[in-house]
Image 1 (cartoon, rainbow, N blue to C red):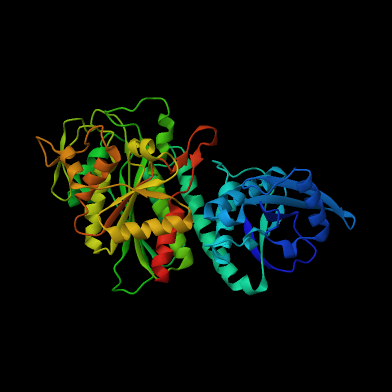
Image 2: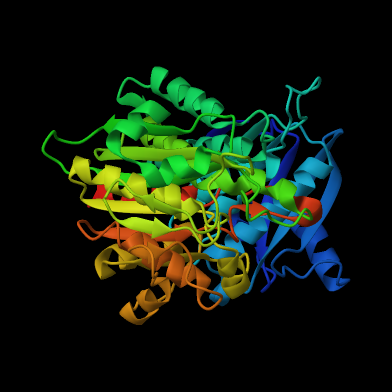
Length: 492
Protein backbone atom coordinates (compact mmCIF):
# COMPACT_ATOMS: atom_id res chain seq x y z
CA UNK A 1 0.00 0.00 0.00
CA UNK A 2 1.25 3.44 -0.98
CA UNK A 3 0.51 6.44 1.26
CA UNK A 4 1.08 10.14 0.70
CA UNK A 5 0.26 13.50 2.27
CA UNK A 6 -1.94 15.87 0.27
CA UNK A 7 -2.41 19.50 1.26
CA UNK A 8 -5.63 21.46 1.07
CA UNK A 9 -7.37 22.90 -0.79
CA UNK A 10 -7.89 19.78 -2.90
CA UNK A 11 -7.74 20.17 -6.64
CA UNK A 12 -10.01 18.04 -8.81
CA UNK A 13 -10.00 14.65 -7.03
CA UNK A 14 -7.52 12.25 -8.61
CA UNK A 15 -8.52 9.30 -6.42
CA UNK A 16 -11.55 7.03 -6.68
CA UNK A 17 -13.25 8.26 -3.52
CA UNK A 18 -13.14 10.87 -0.78
CA UNK A 19 -13.45 9.81 2.88
CA UNK A 20 -15.09 12.47 5.06
CA UNK A 21 -15.71 12.34 8.81
CA UNK A 22 -18.87 13.69 10.38
CA UNK A 23 -19.57 14.22 14.07
CA UNK A 24 -22.92 13.27 15.58
CA UNK A 25 -23.73 16.97 15.82
CA UNK A 26 -24.13 16.59 12.04
CA UNK A 27 -21.19 18.81 11.23
CA UNK A 28 -18.45 17.45 8.96
CA UNK A 29 -15.08 17.46 10.69
CA UNK A 30 -13.72 19.00 7.52
CA UNK A 31 -16.69 21.28 6.78
CA UNK A 32 -14.59 24.00 5.16
CA UNK A 33 -13.26 21.45 2.67
CA UNK A 34 -16.46 19.53 1.93
CA UNK A 35 -17.95 20.27 -1.53
CA UNK A 36 -21.13 22.36 -1.43
CA UNK A 37 -23.13 19.92 -3.55
CA UNK A 38 -22.21 17.11 -1.13
CA UNK A 39 -23.24 19.20 1.88
CA UNK A 40 -26.76 19.56 0.46
CA UNK A 41 -27.04 15.81 -0.18
CA UNK A 42 -25.84 15.11 3.34
CA UNK A 43 -28.43 17.44 4.81
CA UNK A 44 -31.15 15.52 2.93
CA UNK A 45 -29.82 12.17 4.18
CA UNK A 46 -29.65 13.51 7.72
CA UNK A 47 -33.17 14.92 7.53
CA UNK A 48 -34.41 11.54 6.27
CA UNK A 49 -32.48 9.78 9.08
CA UNK A 50 -30.35 7.75 6.69
CA UNK A 51 -27.24 8.95 8.51
CA UNK A 52 -26.65 10.40 11.98
CA UNK A 53 -22.87 10.60 12.44
CA UNK A 54 -22.71 7.96 15.17
CA UNK A 55 -19.36 6.28 15.69
CA UNK A 56 -18.98 3.32 13.36
CA UNK A 57 -21.76 4.45 11.01
CA UNK A 58 -21.00 4.95 7.31
CA UNK A 59 -22.76 6.28 4.23
CA UNK A 60 -21.57 5.74 0.64
CA UNK A 61 -22.57 8.19 -2.08
CA UNK A 62 -21.86 8.30 -5.82
CA UNK A 63 -22.76 11.72 -7.22
CA UNK A 64 -22.64 12.97 -10.83
CA UNK A 65 -20.37 15.97 -11.15
CA UNK A 66 -19.03 17.53 -14.35
CA UNK A 67 -19.88 14.47 -16.40
CA UNK A 68 -18.30 11.93 -14.03
CA UNK A 69 -19.26 10.14 -10.85
CA UNK A 70 -17.61 11.27 -7.61
CA UNK A 71 -17.60 8.70 -4.80
CA UNK A 72 -17.81 9.62 -1.12
CA UNK A 73 -17.54 7.54 2.03
CA UNK A 74 -19.00 9.46 4.98
CA UNK A 75 -17.85 8.04 8.31
CA UNK A 76 -19.46 8.82 11.66
CA UNK A 77 -17.16 10.21 14.36
CA UNK A 78 -19.66 10.16 17.24
CA UNK A 79 -20.21 13.05 19.63
CA UNK A 80 -17.37 15.55 19.36
CA UNK A 81 -17.16 16.17 23.10
CA UNK A 82 -16.76 12.43 23.71
CA UNK A 83 -14.44 11.70 20.80
CA UNK A 84 -11.21 10.01 21.85
CA UNK A 85 -8.43 7.95 20.32
CA UNK A 86 -10.35 4.70 20.47
CA UNK A 87 -13.44 6.12 18.76
CA UNK A 88 -11.25 7.71 16.08
CA UNK A 89 -9.63 4.35 15.34
CA UNK A 90 -13.09 2.79 15.13
CA UNK A 91 -14.07 5.39 12.53
CA UNK A 92 -10.91 4.70 10.55
CA UNK A 93 -11.57 0.97 10.65
CA UNK A 94 -15.17 1.18 9.45
CA UNK A 95 -14.29 3.69 6.71
CA UNK A 96 -11.52 1.60 5.17
CA UNK A 97 -13.72 -1.49 5.24
CA UNK A 98 -16.27 0.33 3.07
CA UNK A 99 -13.52 1.47 0.69
CA UNK A 100 -12.36 -2.14 0.36
CA UNK A 101 -15.88 -3.48 -0.14
CA UNK A 102 -16.43 -1.05 -3.00
CA UNK A 103 -13.11 -2.13 -4.58
CA UNK A 104 -11.88 1.43 -5.01
CA UNK A 105 -8.28 1.52 -6.20
CA UNK A 106 -7.42 4.78 -4.42
CA UNK A 107 -8.87 7.12 -1.81
CA UNK A 108 -8.29 10.52 -0.25
CA UNK A 109 -9.00 10.67 3.47
CA UNK A 110 -10.03 13.87 5.25
CA UNK A 111 -10.29 12.08 8.60
CA UNK A 112 -6.98 13.46 9.87
CA UNK A 113 -8.70 16.87 9.92
CA UNK A 114 -11.11 15.63 12.61
CA UNK A 115 -9.83 17.59 15.59
CA UNK A 116 -10.77 16.51 19.08
CA UNK A 117 -9.16 16.79 22.47
CA UNK A 118 -5.97 14.95 23.30
CA UNK A 119 -4.65 14.04 19.85
CA UNK A 120 -2.83 16.14 17.28
CA UNK A 121 -2.48 15.91 13.51
CA UNK A 122 0.72 13.85 13.72
CA UNK A 123 -1.08 11.24 15.83
CA UNK A 124 -4.14 11.20 13.55
CA UNK A 125 -2.03 10.67 10.44
CA UNK A 126 -0.05 7.92 12.12
CA UNK A 127 -3.24 6.18 13.26
CA UNK A 128 -4.69 6.46 9.75
CA UNK A 129 -1.75 4.52 8.36
CA UNK A 130 -1.72 1.96 11.19
CA UNK A 131 -5.45 1.23 11.09
CA UNK A 132 -5.82 1.28 7.31
CA UNK A 133 -2.81 -1.04 6.90
CA UNK A 134 -4.16 -3.37 9.57
CA UNK A 135 -7.52 -3.64 7.82
CA UNK A 136 -5.99 -4.03 4.37
CA UNK A 137 -3.63 -6.82 5.48
CA UNK A 138 -4.63 -10.22 4.17
CA UNK A 139 -2.69 -13.37 4.90
CA UNK A 140 -1.55 -15.41 1.92
CA UNK A 141 0.98 -18.22 1.97
CA UNK A 142 1.87 -17.48 -1.64
CA UNK A 143 1.81 -14.08 -3.37
CA UNK A 144 -1.75 -13.52 -4.67
CA UNK A 145 -2.28 -13.94 -8.39
CA UNK A 146 -4.04 -10.58 -8.53
CA UNK A 147 -3.06 -7.60 -6.35
CA UNK A 148 -5.60 -6.05 -4.01
CA UNK A 149 -7.62 -3.34 -5.81
CA UNK A 150 -6.79 -0.64 -3.24
CA UNK A 151 -3.30 0.63 -3.99
CA UNK A 152 -3.03 4.25 -2.84
CA UNK A 153 -4.25 6.39 0.05
CA UNK A 154 -3.81 10.17 0.20
CA UNK A 155 -4.15 11.78 3.64
CA UNK A 156 -5.33 15.37 3.40
CA UNK A 157 -4.07 18.03 5.83
CA UNK A 158 -3.79 21.80 5.85
CA UNK A 159 -0.60 23.46 4.60
CA UNK A 160 0.51 24.42 8.11
CA UNK A 161 0.14 20.77 9.21
CA UNK A 162 2.27 19.36 6.41
CA UNK A 163 5.52 18.90 8.37
CA UNK A 164 3.97 17.17 11.37
CA UNK A 165 1.81 15.09 9.02
CA UNK A 166 4.91 13.85 7.20
CA UNK A 167 6.41 12.86 10.54
CA UNK A 168 3.22 11.01 11.44
CA UNK A 169 3.25 9.30 8.07
CA UNK A 170 6.82 8.12 8.59
CA UNK A 171 6.04 6.75 12.05
CA UNK A 172 2.82 5.14 10.87
CA UNK A 173 4.54 3.42 7.95
CA UNK A 174 7.32 2.01 10.15
CA UNK A 175 4.89 0.73 12.77
CA UNK A 176 2.52 -0.67 10.14
CA UNK A 177 5.41 -2.49 8.45
CA UNK A 178 6.50 -3.92 11.79
CA UNK A 179 2.94 -5.03 12.53
CA UNK A 180 2.65 -6.65 9.11
CA UNK A 181 5.79 -8.71 9.68
CA UNK A 182 4.56 -9.68 13.16
CA UNK A 183 1.15 -10.69 11.84
CA UNK A 184 2.49 -12.70 8.93
CA UNK A 185 4.90 -14.62 11.15
CA UNK A 186 2.04 -15.35 13.55
CA UNK A 187 -0.30 -16.49 10.79
CA UNK A 188 2.21 -18.82 9.15
CA UNK A 189 1.66 -22.52 9.92
CA UNK A 190 3.98 -24.19 12.38
CA UNK A 191 5.49 -26.50 9.77
CA UNK A 192 6.85 -23.42 7.96
CA UNK A 193 7.48 -20.97 10.79
CA UNK A 194 9.92 -23.04 12.83
CA UNK A 195 12.63 -21.69 15.17
CA UNK A 196 15.03 -21.89 12.23
CA UNK A 197 12.62 -19.89 10.06
CA UNK A 198 12.35 -17.20 12.74
CA UNK A 199 16.15 -17.03 12.85
CA UNK A 200 16.25 -16.66 9.07
CA UNK A 201 13.74 -13.80 9.29
CA UNK A 202 15.93 -12.07 11.87
CA UNK A 203 18.94 -12.47 9.58
CA UNK A 204 16.93 -10.95 6.73
CA UNK A 205 16.04 -7.92 8.87
CA UNK A 206 19.66 -7.49 9.97
CA UNK A 207 21.01 -7.76 6.42
CA UNK A 208 18.77 -4.93 5.19
CA UNK A 209 19.63 -2.51 8.02
CA UNK A 210 23.20 -1.43 8.66
CA UNK A 211 22.55 -0.45 12.27
CA UNK A 212 21.48 -3.97 13.18
CA UNK A 213 23.80 -6.80 14.16
CA UNK A 214 22.74 -10.37 14.84
CA UNK A 215 23.93 -13.31 16.87
CA UNK A 216 22.07 -16.63 17.00
CA UNK A 217 22.73 -19.07 19.83
CA UNK A 218 22.41 -22.71 18.86
CA UNK A 219 21.59 -25.50 21.31
CA UNK A 220 25.29 -26.23 21.77
CA UNK A 221 25.83 -22.59 22.79
CA UNK A 222 22.93 -22.77 25.24
CA UNK A 223 24.32 -25.96 26.71
CA UNK A 224 27.69 -24.28 27.24
CA UNK A 225 25.92 -21.42 29.03
CA UNK A 226 24.03 -23.81 31.29
CA UNK A 227 20.54 -23.06 29.93
CA UNK A 228 19.08 -26.29 31.27
CA UNK A 229 15.58 -24.85 31.59
CA UNK A 230 15.44 -23.57 28.00
CA UNK A 231 16.85 -26.79 26.53
CA UNK A 232 14.41 -28.98 28.45
CA UNK A 233 11.55 -27.55 26.40
CA UNK A 234 13.10 -28.37 23.01
CA UNK A 235 13.93 -31.98 23.91
CA UNK A 236 10.60 -33.23 22.59
CA UNK A 237 11.04 -31.54 19.21
CA UNK A 238 13.04 -32.43 16.12
CA UNK A 239 13.40 -28.71 15.41
CA UNK A 240 16.50 -27.21 17.08
CA UNK A 241 15.89 -24.35 19.49
CA UNK A 242 17.30 -20.90 18.72
CA UNK A 243 18.03 -17.87 20.87
CA UNK A 244 18.03 -14.91 18.48
CA UNK A 245 19.87 -11.73 19.47
CA UNK A 246 19.26 -8.62 17.34
CA UNK A 247 21.14 -5.52 18.45
CA UNK A 248 20.36 -1.98 17.28
CA UNK A 249 22.90 0.76 18.04
CA UNK A 250 21.21 4.11 17.56
CA UNK A 251 22.37 5.84 20.73
CA UNK A 252 25.71 6.71 22.28
CA UNK A 253 28.05 3.83 23.05
CA UNK A 254 27.68 4.42 26.80
CA UNK A 255 23.86 4.47 26.67
CA UNK A 256 22.39 1.45 28.44
CA UNK A 257 20.23 -0.64 26.11
CA UNK A 258 16.54 -1.33 26.34
CA UNK A 259 16.22 -5.12 26.11
CA UNK A 260 13.08 -6.65 24.61
CA UNK A 261 12.47 -10.36 25.17
CA UNK A 262 9.91 -12.35 23.19
CA UNK A 263 8.54 -15.85 23.69
CA UNK A 264 8.90 -17.64 20.36
CA UNK A 265 7.18 -21.03 20.78
CA UNK A 266 6.49 -21.75 17.11
CA UNK A 267 4.15 -24.54 18.15
CA UNK A 268 3.01 -25.59 21.61
CA UNK A 269 1.25 -28.94 21.96
CA UNK A 270 1.87 -28.86 25.71
CA UNK A 271 4.53 -31.58 25.69
CA UNK A 272 3.80 -34.61 27.87
CA UNK A 273 1.06 -32.54 29.56
CA UNK A 274 -0.72 -32.61 26.22
CA UNK A 275 -3.26 -29.89 25.44
CA UNK A 276 -6.81 -30.77 24.37
CA UNK A 277 -7.15 -31.21 20.62
CA UNK A 278 -9.86 -28.58 20.14
CA UNK A 279 -8.27 -25.29 19.17
CA UNK A 280 -4.73 -26.65 19.31
CA UNK A 281 -4.10 -25.27 15.80
CA UNK A 282 -4.03 -21.81 17.36
CA UNK A 283 -0.90 -22.75 19.28
CA UNK A 284 1.04 -21.69 16.19
CA UNK A 285 0.43 -18.22 17.68
CA UNK A 286 2.49 -19.04 20.77
CA UNK A 287 5.40 -17.27 19.09
CA UNK A 288 3.68 -13.89 18.81
CA UNK A 289 5.89 -12.37 21.53
CA UNK A 290 8.96 -13.28 19.51
CA UNK A 291 7.32 -12.05 16.31
CA UNK A 292 6.59 -8.74 18.07
CA UNK A 293 10.26 -8.33 18.94
CA UNK A 294 11.21 -8.82 15.28
CA UNK A 295 8.54 -6.36 14.12
CA UNK A 296 9.63 -3.76 16.67
CA UNK A 297 13.32 -4.13 15.81
CA UNK A 298 12.47 -3.55 12.15
CA UNK A 299 10.39 -0.45 12.97
CA UNK A 300 13.02 0.99 15.33
CA UNK A 301 15.62 0.71 12.60
CA UNK A 302 13.38 2.22 9.92
CA UNK A 303 12.82 5.24 12.17
CA UNK A 304 16.49 5.34 13.23
CA UNK A 305 15.56 6.08 16.83
CA UNK A 306 18.43 7.48 18.96
CA UNK A 307 18.32 4.50 21.32
CA UNK A 308 20.21 1.28 21.89
CA UNK A 309 17.77 -1.62 21.69
CA UNK A 310 18.44 -5.34 21.97
CA UNK A 311 15.83 -7.87 20.87
CA UNK A 312 16.02 -11.41 22.22
CA UNK A 313 13.73 -14.09 20.77
CA UNK A 314 13.64 -17.39 22.66
CA UNK A 315 12.37 -19.92 20.13
CA UNK A 316 11.51 -23.59 20.38
CA UNK A 317 8.70 -26.09 19.90
CA UNK A 318 7.01 -27.94 22.76
CA UNK A 319 5.99 -31.43 21.67
CA UNK A 320 5.58 -34.87 23.27
CA UNK A 321 8.35 -37.37 22.61
CA UNK A 322 10.20 -40.18 24.34
CA UNK A 323 12.94 -37.69 25.22
CA UNK A 324 10.61 -34.85 26.25
CA UNK A 325 10.81 -33.44 29.77
CA UNK A 326 8.24 -34.93 32.17
CA UNK A 327 6.17 -33.79 35.13
CA UNK A 328 8.34 -34.27 38.19
CA UNK A 329 11.61 -33.55 36.39
CA UNK A 330 13.96 -31.07 38.06
CA UNK A 331 15.84 -28.62 35.82
CA UNK A 332 18.81 -26.39 36.54
CA UNK A 333 18.47 -22.95 34.99
CA UNK A 334 21.28 -20.71 33.74
CA UNK A 335 21.00 -18.73 36.97
CA UNK A 336 21.64 -21.87 39.02
CA UNK A 337 18.11 -21.94 40.44
CA UNK A 338 16.42 -25.34 40.19
CA UNK A 339 12.87 -25.82 38.88
CA UNK A 340 10.48 -28.69 39.47
CA UNK A 341 8.35 -29.23 36.37
CA UNK A 342 4.80 -29.92 37.52
CA UNK A 343 3.25 -29.21 34.12
CA UNK A 344 5.20 -29.35 30.85
CA UNK A 345 2.61 -27.04 29.28
CA UNK A 346 3.96 -24.20 31.43
CA UNK A 347 6.97 -24.10 29.11
CA UNK A 348 7.09 -20.43 28.10
CA UNK A 349 8.44 -19.40 31.48
CA UNK A 350 11.09 -22.13 31.19
CA UNK A 351 12.61 -20.60 28.07
CA UNK A 352 12.07 -17.03 29.21
CA UNK A 353 13.77 -17.46 32.57
CA UNK A 354 17.08 -18.45 30.97
CA UNK A 355 16.69 -15.63 28.43
CA UNK A 356 16.18 -13.11 31.24
CA UNK A 357 19.34 -14.39 32.91
CA UNK A 358 21.14 -14.07 29.56
CA UNK A 359 19.90 -10.45 29.24
CA UNK A 360 21.73 -9.49 32.42
CA UNK A 361 25.09 -9.45 30.57
CA UNK A 362 24.00 -6.40 28.55
CA UNK A 363 23.70 -4.22 31.68
CA UNK A 364 20.21 -3.16 30.55
CA UNK A 365 18.45 0.06 31.42
CA UNK A 366 15.15 -1.86 31.40
CA UNK A 367 13.98 -5.28 30.25
CA UNK A 368 10.50 -5.83 28.83
CA UNK A 369 9.32 -9.33 27.97
CA UNK A 370 6.20 -10.14 26.01
CA UNK A 371 4.68 -13.58 25.87
CA UNK A 372 1.48 -15.47 25.14
CA UNK A 373 2.06 -16.92 28.57
CA UNK A 374 -1.17 -17.88 30.34
CA UNK A 375 -4.72 -18.77 29.44
CA UNK A 376 -5.54 -17.29 32.84
CA UNK A 377 -4.86 -13.82 31.43
CA UNK A 378 -7.49 -14.38 28.76
CA UNK A 379 -9.96 -15.50 31.43
CA UNK A 380 -9.18 -12.48 33.64
CA UNK A 381 -8.98 -9.70 31.06
CA UNK A 382 -10.51 -11.04 27.85
CA UNK A 383 -9.13 -9.86 24.51
CA UNK A 384 -9.14 -6.11 25.19
CA UNK A 385 -6.03 -5.30 27.28
CA UNK A 386 -2.76 -7.17 27.63
CA UNK A 387 -1.71 -7.96 31.19
CA UNK A 388 1.13 -5.95 32.73
CA UNK A 389 3.24 -6.93 35.73
CA UNK A 390 6.66 -5.70 36.78
CA UNK A 391 9.11 -4.88 39.54
CA UNK A 392 9.48 -1.15 38.79
CA UNK A 393 6.63 1.35 39.09
CA UNK A 394 8.15 3.94 36.76
CA UNK A 395 8.63 1.42 33.96
CA UNK A 396 5.08 0.14 34.41
CA UNK A 397 3.68 3.70 34.48
CA UNK A 398 5.61 4.56 31.32
CA UNK A 399 4.14 1.51 29.57
CA UNK A 400 0.64 2.44 30.73
CA UNK A 401 1.15 5.96 29.32
CA UNK A 402 2.30 4.45 26.02
CA UNK A 403 -0.75 2.19 26.00
CA UNK A 404 -3.03 5.20 26.40
CA UNK A 405 -1.43 7.06 23.49
CA UNK A 406 -1.18 4.07 21.17
CA UNK A 407 -4.66 2.72 22.03
CA UNK A 408 -2.94 -0.63 22.58
CA UNK A 409 -4.46 -1.25 26.00
CA UNK A 410 -2.76 -2.58 29.15
CA UNK A 411 -4.03 -3.48 32.60
CA UNK A 412 -1.62 -3.80 35.51
CA UNK A 413 -1.92 -6.76 37.89
CA UNK A 414 -0.24 -7.01 41.32
CA UNK A 415 3.04 -8.81 41.87
CA UNK A 416 2.81 -9.18 45.64
CA UNK A 417 5.12 -11.35 47.70
CA UNK A 418 2.21 -13.44 49.00
CA UNK A 419 1.78 -14.99 45.54
CA UNK A 420 5.35 -16.32 45.60
CA UNK A 421 4.23 -18.85 48.23
CA UNK A 422 2.33 -20.75 45.53
CA UNK A 423 5.57 -21.65 43.74
CA UNK A 424 7.06 -23.59 46.67
CA UNK A 425 8.48 -27.02 45.87
CA UNK A 426 9.66 -29.84 48.12
CA UNK A 427 12.24 -30.90 45.53
CA UNK A 428 13.64 -27.72 43.94
CA UNK A 429 13.99 -23.98 44.49
CA UNK A 430 10.59 -23.49 42.87
CA UNK A 431 7.85 -25.20 40.91
CA UNK A 432 7.01 -24.06 37.38
CA UNK A 433 3.32 -23.57 38.21
CA UNK A 434 1.53 -22.18 41.24
CA UNK A 435 -1.80 -23.94 41.06
CA UNK A 436 -5.14 -22.82 39.73
CA UNK A 437 -5.43 -19.50 41.54
CA UNK A 438 -3.99 -16.31 39.98
CA UNK A 439 -2.23 -18.14 37.15
CA UNK A 440 -1.13 -15.00 35.32
CA UNK A 441 0.33 -13.51 38.49
CA UNK A 442 2.18 -16.65 39.62
CA UNK A 443 3.67 -17.02 36.13
CA UNK A 444 5.03 -13.48 36.45
CA UNK A 445 6.21 -14.28 39.99
CA UNK A 446 8.21 -17.15 38.52
CA UNK A 447 9.85 -14.83 35.96
CA UNK A 448 10.48 -12.14 38.57
CA UNK A 449 12.98 -14.42 40.32
CA UNK A 450 15.19 -14.16 37.25
CA UNK A 451 14.78 -10.38 36.89
CA UNK A 452 15.91 -9.18 40.31
CA UNK A 453 19.02 -7.39 38.96
CA UNK A 454 17.28 -4.96 36.61
CA UNK A 455 14.07 -3.01 36.09
CA UNK A 456 11.67 -5.40 34.39
CA UNK A 457 8.14 -5.53 33.04
CA UNK A 458 6.21 -8.51 31.73
CA UNK A 459 3.39 -8.29 29.16
CA UNK A 460 1.05 -11.28 28.98
CA UNK A 461 -0.43 -11.07 25.49
CA UNK A 462 -2.28 -14.40 25.49
CA UNK A 463 -5.61 -12.63 24.93
CA UNK A 464 -4.49 -9.91 22.52
CA UNK A 465 -1.91 -11.37 20.12
CA UNK A 466 -4.48 -13.02 17.87
CA UNK A 467 -8.18 -13.14 17.13
CA UNK A 468 -10.12 -16.38 17.11
CA UNK A 469 -13.32 -17.52 15.40
CA UNK A 470 -14.31 -16.38 11.92
CA UNK A 471 -11.83 -13.50 12.05
CA UNK A 472 -8.97 -15.74 13.22
CA UNK A 473 -5.60 -14.13 12.67
CA UNK A 474 -2.73 -12.31 14.32
CA UNK A 475 -3.35 -8.75 15.51
CA UNK A 476 0.20 -7.37 15.47
CA UNK A 477 -0.14 -6.32 19.11
CA UNK A 478 1.73 -5.13 21.09
CA UNK A 479 3.93 -3.59 18.37
CA UNK A 480 2.14 -0.18 18.61
CA UNK A 481 2.47 -0.14 22.40
CA UNK A 482 6.18 -0.99 22.46
CA UNK A 483 6.90 1.46 19.65
CA UNK A 484 5.08 4.24 21.50
CA UNK A 485 7.13 3.49 24.61
CA UNK A 486 10.34 3.67 22.55
CA UNK A 487 9.21 6.86 20.79
CA UNK A 488 8.52 8.42 24.19
CA UNK A 489 11.98 7.39 25.36
CA UNK A 490 13.56 8.80 22.19
CA UNK A 491 11.69 12.09 22.55
CA UNK A 492 12.75 12.37 26.19
